[in-house]
Image 1 (cartoon, rainbow, N blue to C red):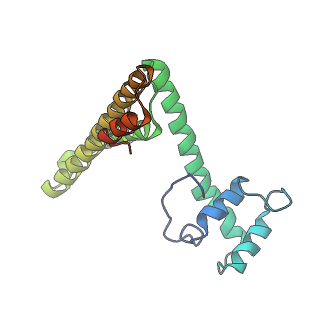
Image 2: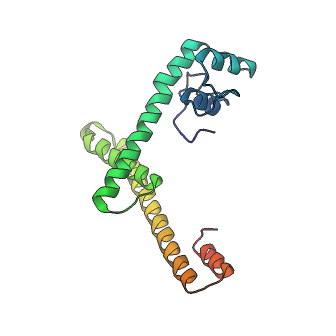
Length: 178
């Protein structure tokens, strides 16, 4: 199953197919044939047809170029951003937290670029609400990361002090980690 998540394009048969993750894995070369060789486009189309997905090589190519490749590029950009933030702050960020930071930054740029005078009150409220939601998600992730850090330090201290596995398990449970 692919670890990539990207939106489904409404008109793309492959994006909307229950076979999408497997097809993406084949296109990426993460899922090979039994003999270890990579799947060719024609073979992927045939494989899909055997499972009820009637598509063409052209449609598969469009899916790869217009939907899958941009998602991979976005994932790589997020990874680079995580690394840059880690180097700048000396602190390791989780991918979820880095993604939330990126969403918040993009939301703030969009809000900043809006022509507020051309929006009616309802549109202004929706824009502000979306900005607040992005900030709220980041705040929740921050609290979760802090909770994980504290739990890890407590667990390490308890282990070094000779605490048993049951006590450590209960501490993890208190912090909501089990």
